[in-house]
Image (cartoon, rainbow over all chains, first blue to last red; front, side):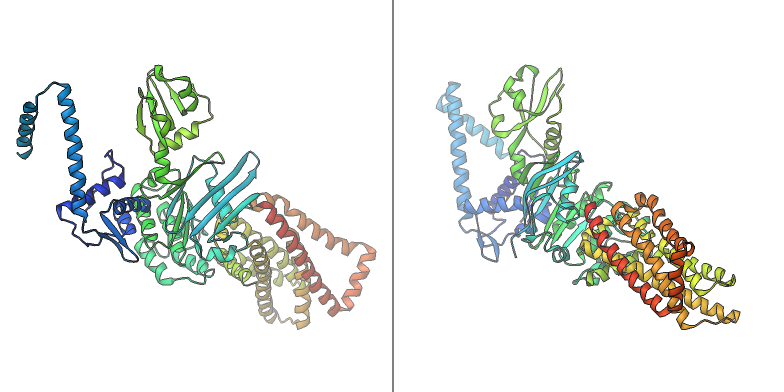
Length: 126
Length: 287
Length: 214
């Protein structure tokens, strides 16, 4: 598992950890049933407080991405990458809805919206 | 064995000209607590009370679940202490120090001591008075680690130390609590040391307890509010802590929930230093 | 009790580097010995000298701020005070032994002789004088710390010397001394007993004085 913390980010440290863990689950860097570093080891390695890593792991567990096994530690859940994908798709929905509303206010037609979307996707892929 | 290694309940101590009033906080096992506050706030007094170097006027202090007075001798077998300057006799060498200190501990580990002395590069045969500040601190640390202490109390250990040594110390402390069975109480006015590493914070200001709880709670509770002179409403002026007014604007500390209503102002996260500075200014006349 | 003994060991470690200053006793003994003083007189002089020296541990304690060290160790108030008393008496006993040995050597050299009884007598009398001075000094040092107490220590000295002069001069009291002289075993026992009582009382006072300081 790789974690890099930025002090200048707007995100609190525990959020950064969560994001990076989720990204790695999605990309396959973290596989199902893989064991994560212990709370204290992670805190030690990142030079942050134990409560911070505890919060990150607890929230990841609540959200269903990882699970804790008594006496053994935290493991990546099998459904992890599906869950993340679901979350991200919901994010896309929200963003698209927001874009559509803004477009309507700007009096753009549906066709204009779709061609703008296509153009942007081309730019993104380059 | 209890889960709370240190517990203070309504501790009070009066001196002429200074009162430490109703200090209560709890340090569970396995965590680091920072004890912060401006100079003269009462941090050292609190530590002296915990160690029974001073008699408290009121309240209870529990170490490892037992009274710090009744169980004093037993408790101190498991407590390591580091002060801001050498507590040993000037003329002692590292060897003398071990010979003198090990007498008092049932569980003295010579191997651990020797290992730490070489890790810290402490000179043999040289008098403690000739050590640098950093080496003096490391000697106290080596002794504290060599009797299996479960609670480490440090009173301003980093004042006068260079950043490299301060960083070394923080790493050592994080290693120390890695097994979850040991705790650290770290008093300092160099709060940047604690910013990332401390789990809990107790903030004492002018003898009063201003805050105790997790670091996150503290940082989440307050915000820095800045704005133009005309944005300074009467209510804001009353509720802002440590308000600083200039011709071009103002700056102060305010509760996070309250901050939301002031939409014209800039709301920033407050660092521990911001909080300590602003709270120390509270009660002083604002110009 | 064992913690008090640990405190005694700690005191010895604390004073380790200042051992040389006790070597002045050697000079003392040789000087007075050459002058032909009796063993008793030499020991009496050693007694007040060691009593004076015994305050230096308080000085070292204050200079090195050893209260913090004591605070971090398993030492209760009682252990610190009792340990200090034991240390002080032991310092006297060791100095006494050194003085006797030196005197013995000197006596051989000078062709003098002295009896074991003289030794006991010297021990008794010098212990009494030592205890009287130290008994008054210790509570003062425990209460006020070295720097402030330094000013006041002349009182015990003046007091004891005054008493000695008193015993020597006042007619009625010198009668007691004559009686004692002729019953020397009794004198020795009185001295030892008195020393013990003085030390014990002084110890109780010191405990109260030291507690008040916190």
